[in-house]
Image (tube, rainbow, N blue to C red; front, top):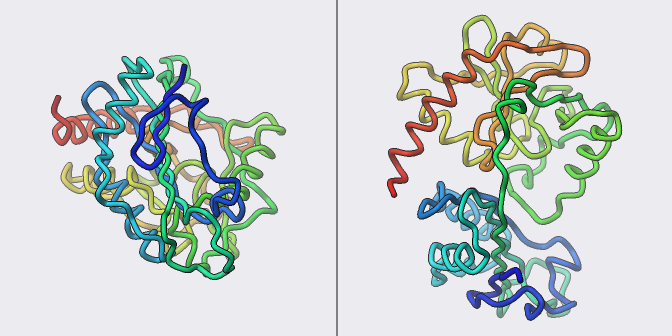
Length: 285
């Protein structure tokens, strides 16, 4: 029996109740964060909550700061028997629809926390790397103020990912209206090119990931700072190594972008080694 948490109450999934009029269901009116937990360590929880807090301020949803998020996650780990790595999802919606189609301040927002077992990628997965295709039709609107928000309205990303998988790829690279490389559907992009570690800037219309921010801090401290650059999809051919970051994969190599292959892993492996040391220093058992 799986357990979930609704507004701070941990209970069996079959007993959990959300209103059919919840704005998250009706309009995608809310935010979410996905993060990784392992044992007593819940990685970068405060950064995820800070991003959700900023997003909730923009959307005029009161952030329930009084909830013990760490305690809830650990309770879910115990009740769901999550002994190894776990994927944790925190959702915040405006709550039950109160009649207005404006972004009004709700009387009672909804907070949902989920936690499930997660299998780590295998050494074979690492050696192969992700296969990625450049999405040719769906574009990121880099002029939209919603680009920096991790909203529940995730359909463009799900559609792009599905289209990629239907072509036999794992993931899709999204570009913006200026045909600049932006991000993948569930991750940020990094690449080594001419000896430099680079990533697209936030102004391209990407979601500024928690792992993206942490990795940039890590590499700055390591003396290999990340350069923010704008690239067209064609310029990816000049890259020596490409990898993605997100809160579950952390650092993971890209093995193929359409017909171009990227078999080298040395620098990406070094980035992962540096990042794990940086992460573990901040999350002691």
